[in-house]
Length: 205
Image 1 (tube, one colour):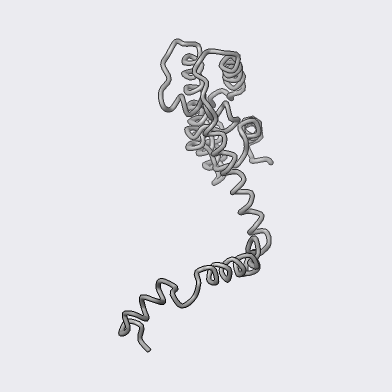
Image 2 (tube, rainbow, N blue to C red):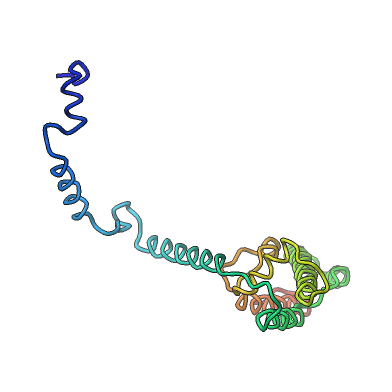
């Protein structure tokens, strides 16, 4: 029987005139209650590590969102003073710019494919440290009241407050999930590796 050909029957079915609404509701609730709280990865043919990676990413996203909605502090207080101190520490820890021309001259007699890799690495590293130095210097001036905050400086300020790598720096650095402190330590290790590479003439771990 086609319900469309019987308007009365179709209307009764849609309005549940034949059965009380609570019957359908109780059936739905009973079915939902017996469903598992979550679907394990093997249902989708995935390894258990897939769930671990998903939970880690979800936790990181939740933490990042929670940090973003923290109330901002506009007044010059102890927290701002701490940021100025942190900015000074970061400035002192930024490796000096390397003279790429002298490095190329040193490797001129022993060029190899790895030498060109070193040149590219040094060029990108110099760009990153220059961006870091410029942005931190401007942020320090803004915190001290000698310059106004731009959108970019405000983002850097929030990132430092939350112990995260500013997006500006991320755009000039390899992808990473490190915190700001671990990333700065890794930056020093990279600089030491480049120094050994330049001194020894070969890449070392």
